[in-house]
Amino acid sequence: MIGLGKQVQGAFLLLSFLGWLSTVIAFYPSQYISLARSSEIRYSLFHGKGCSTCCQGNSVMSPILKRNVRLNFKTPRNAEDDGLLSRVETPASGASSSPAFLSLLPVLLPLLLVYVSNQWSRSSLYYLVNFSDSPSVSAYTAMNVDLSFSEAQYGVLASVAFTALFAVASLLAGNLSDRSDRKLLTVGAASAWSVATIATAAASGYEQVLAARVFMGLACAFATPSAYTLIRDLVPSDKTALANSVYGSGVYFGGALASLSILLDNNLGWRGALGAIGAYGIVTAALAAAVLPQDPTKEKRRESEMLEKEAETTLGDEDVVSLSLLTDASEVLSTPVVRWLFLGSFLRFCSGLCIGVWAAPYFRLAFPDSSSSYAVINALIVGLCGVASGVGGGWASDRAGSAAVDAGRDEGSGRLVVPVIGSLLAAPAWWLTVSASTFEWAMLWLAVEYLVAECWFGPVIAVLQSKVGAAKGGTAQGMFTLTGAVGNFAPTLLGTLYGQATAQGADNGTALSGLLSAGVCTGYILSATCFILCAQAADVSLPSSLEEKGN
Image 1: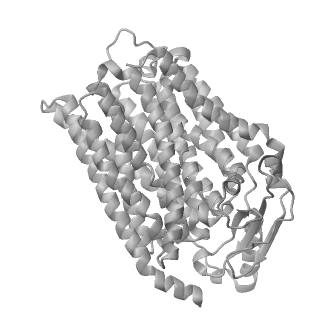
Image 2: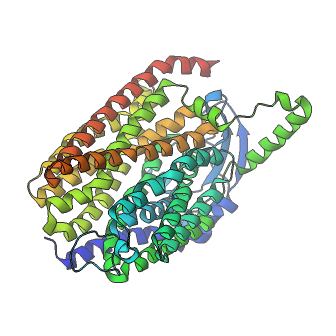
Image 3: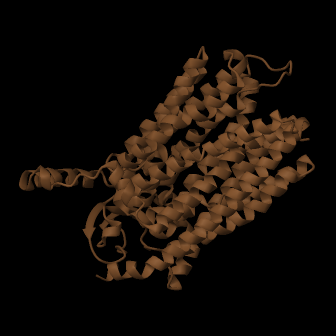
């Protein structure tokens, strides 16, 4: 078993890394803000792949990267990519050097830190309750003891209370990100869920915690649609999967910090822990407000609104087409590529959420003497292996997509090779995790599972955004978030089956192990199948896409 000293060292290592990310931004605020305020903004219409002219604008990061960065906006010629797209380009346009990618830090780092806050705030609840009969459990460290709520009430807080408005708001959030200032949405959402976290820390009863949790779910729904569409508009297309994966690593950093909340709980109590988490969220919201570049399509939206008003005056209201939310959603789902992508993502979400909700209870049952070690080791596995898998998957996906294009295939079908392989390898890795006879072997296989499984997110988002077009990107991202929210019913179903099994006399550990093995592994294999079918559909649609572009 790992001693307390090593636990603290591991926690300090992970927190120090996140602190370094914050320092990179905070130390160079004027340089990063200049990206939004002083960069040369140029609108251009053309038919090529984009402007590769050497940037003559302001040097916004030359003290660090010796590079000039500019924001170039382009309007593509085909209808599939309608809307205003933008890219952050370096003088060597299209080059895939490390400095070129580092020039995207002003975009990725504030979004990443905000997403860490999102995940930490929503997941910390799981680690601040304790339903054991141990005499060491007190109202100071256990929220459920202090506020006197049951396991069933905790189940409502952990799932339905958060998911209810989160699911409903996801579509609205995606549609709103297509039509509103996405920087403002990001800052506002981060501020809102941080206030909800602090309100939870100050709650005097279960009802107040429930209300704060519902409000948190509403606020958290607005994070990813704005972030992913900003990345789409500000990052070169050949780096979008990697950029999406870097941003998506916030899930693992936030999950790791949530696991480490046990240490905060032991030292500050559950109220102090939530207060610290909420304060971190306020800080990240302020950093995003100061550092994140302005929404590049803000001015374009104003022009579009003026044109719409002129159209109403000239043609009359009956000739103006108003796209409703349901219309946008149906257009997003109009191709088999996107439908298979959503189905595969739903199944993948189901497997991941079952692990997220039930892994901790399982390991506490299987290895009760190692619960403290599990909290820290799990944090390191999630934070390090999860991030390595996500970023590595994005990097590999970008290259697989380029190789597919060189071979005359659809770029998306090449990108999807990564989630297919990852899901197929994750199934046996997870089976070995829950079948391990010792804690050490279980943690080893859990690390392997994270390394192979978490490579899927960035590639899938890159394919989704490339297939739906810029004008529907926010709606598509909201639908993707909704898919994950619906996936929350999978751990609920697993819990129901688990309760039935134990009520019939089955051993707790054996029953939970069997359900986790069957449910998670089945989800992995089925999701890989859907991603394969999605890739095949993308290749089939390639000739018609090329013909449309030729016209």
